[in-house]
Length: 142
Image (tube, rainbow, N blue to C red; front, side):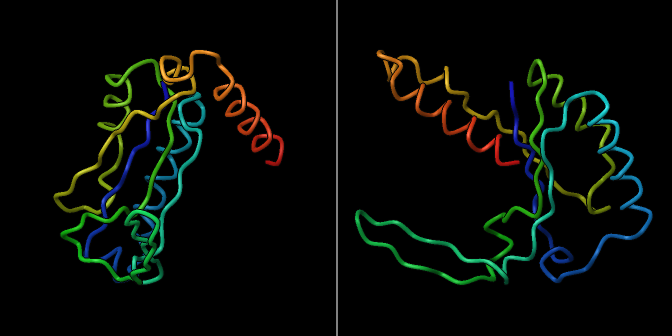
């Protein structure tokens, strides 16, 4: 099972305040443990929403809203992609994580859909085969 771990933004991340050297070292050690355990597949911090945009969809219409976005929208400040045997294992790993902000905050864990999850909607397997081919192409470019 793969999970996306979503770190929520706060006033510091939105203000461009960089983590302390101590927190960077703690997070680096945690990431190293994740990698050595074969859990971490990806992980990155994100720039403030002031450097981003949202594309709004309404039928065939598209409109763009430039950042910054309110903290009440719970923007994402960073993420990991982990592969674990269960949600419980992902929770156990996250409980070992240094507090990303030092404040009261929340980190969300969401399971990622796998190709086989769409078997019922794709009885011939054609769409899943195309998806697997695309994933293989992306992996080959890394």
